[in-house]
Amino acid sequence: MEIFKEIDNPKSKEFEQLLNSQLSRAKIEEGKIIEGKINKITEKYVFLFIENLKSEPVLDINELKSMGLAEKIKVGEKISVLLEKIEDKNGEVVVSASKAQKIKGWDKLVKAYENKEPIMGKITSKCKGGCIVEHIETGSLMFLPGSQISDKPLKDISHLMNEPQKFALIKLDKVRGNACVSRREIISSFKKEDKAKIIEKYKVGDIIKNAEVKGYSSFGCFFNVNGELDVLVHLQEISYSRVNHPDEVFNIGEKHDLKVISVDKEKLQVGCSVKQLSKDPFEHIENYELNKVYRVKVVKIMDFGAFCELEPGLTTLLHSSELSWTKKNLSAKKMFKVGDEIDCVITEIDKEKRRVAISHRLTKENPFDIFNNKYPVGTIIDGEIVNKNEYSLFVKVEDLDIDAFLHCNDLTYLNNGEEELEKYKKGDKIKVKVLEIKTSEQKVRVGLRQTQTDPFDWFKDKKVNQTITVKIISTDNKGLIVRPEGCEMDFTIKKSQIAINAADARPSRFTGGERIDCAIADLDLSKRKVNLSIKLLEEIEKKEALEKYGSEGSGKNLPFKSLSEDLKKKDKK
Image (tube, rainbow, N blue to C red):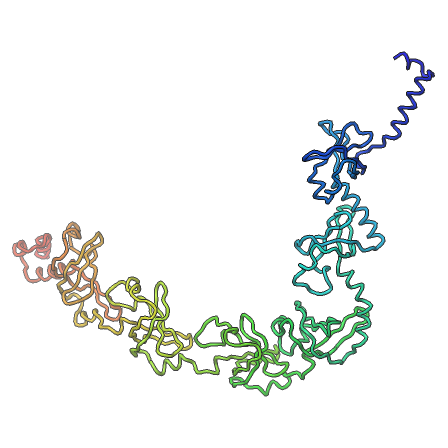
């Protein structure tokens, strides 16, 4: 180190000059874009040589390929990178080619925005509210709102995808680094001068022939005139009748005559009207009468019905509920097509609300009235099962378009209704009895068991407290299942009704097949309800015994355990 001991030494001055020249060239700062030369290429990485850095920065090959720089991956090629860190915690240099590209691209976008110059880009994908546009020169991504795609509504933009085209920068957020572009502005700029010349042709009062329906909005309908101009017909100018949305009246592609009602040369807009081509029909609405048949023309078919025209300009709704007497939720598409002329009855005229309601079904006789006149309640008729669900059958009677309702409980007197229902299927012919007709509700109820002899009639000549003989069919913990002799129906004697003494009220005392006597405890022929009781019979016989045998000894031979005590009580009295 003796050579540097004296500063004035020539060797010391030479070293100082060399050091200063080296430091003057080494202007390397973090956050700046610098160029590096590809020095080495491996299977996954590219190594760069950047002068004055202590080590070689590394780039991922896939990153370069995703940026469209696959052709530049060659030894000796130069690539711009952003120097993020001169030395990280591992002592490595950190650089990014994609961030460098984005920063360069942003600078170019700012310059184009300030100079109001269009840029070249391509729509790469759709997103919520619009599309993503890639700047062809730098690869920067920008947002294209849906309203800025074109100067007319487009249902399909597949023909615009990945096609290089011009865009105008309409908004730039330098803080967030966001850019918004417009294709519509580019298109409109070319058309603006031509559109001004076209609009000069029109004046208020002109009649435009065969304008084509182009699109809808909530406030009106757009028409294309001769392929050179789009005009708006406001919702209030569509019809003298009330219109909630243009699709209630128009179909895309239809052609209609229009009347020009406004021309705005500054905004380059023409307003038109459809309804002003005819007189207001509500001025002579008194000519139409309620409940009278009129011939109408179907002009529009919707899911909820059809819009029909009584006369030009007077449109009315035929709701789906007024299409048929018998079929619910019927679609107008299955019955009519646009242009059909049909008969309808006017059911409502509201001049203040400018609304007219009509009905198609009222032009035909109500099939339920026909049914009521031809088959009154109590009539037995032949029918065919046309439908079935888990608890009922639907029966069609002759050629009438009515499906009568048959509940499973009205199938049989003897068996369980749901089990009996399993025996029937579509197409079976059955004889039923009309039980109920509700014309206003459009319902008919029929029964099958009502055409048969009611086994409950066995009780017609019976009365309460009368003794009858029954056969025990089966037993369970709840009581006895019995069948009266001469009757086809089974009844239950509850456990509590088997005997007076609780100890004897055991269903297990019986094995089944025995014939025993019991009494009728309750009987209601209208409700087809009867209660049987062995206990009641014991009480009746016990009472008779007390009345007949008044001494204590007399009752000891009777088969009643408590009779002796009852007789003693009677003697004391």
